[in-house]
Amino acid sequence: TDRLIEWCKTHEAARKKLFSNSTQDAWEEGRSKQQLCHGKNDIYVEIAKVIFSAGDESVKIHALAQDNPGIFTGPIRSRLCSLKQKYRKYIVLLGQTGAG
Image (cartoon, rainbow, N blue to C red):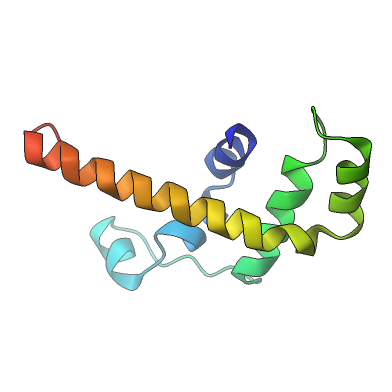
């Protein structure tokens, strides 16, 4: 999760495409809608390559991620959805306390 969050922090355009790229979001933020030349699955593949490129993963997983990163797109998409749901839950809770 840490590498996923770091990637999201450093890739603003892709992050907006994944999380908040509706026309309404862009209008409310005073920006134009992000148009990337590739789809979300391509972004998930890029994320998989970065997440599994180094660190404590086994050599086998590292090689698999570099040779066939597409197999990791489902789990990455699932993890991002889970994180978005948690984020939205906490935003609602903060709003109810008057702190958000």
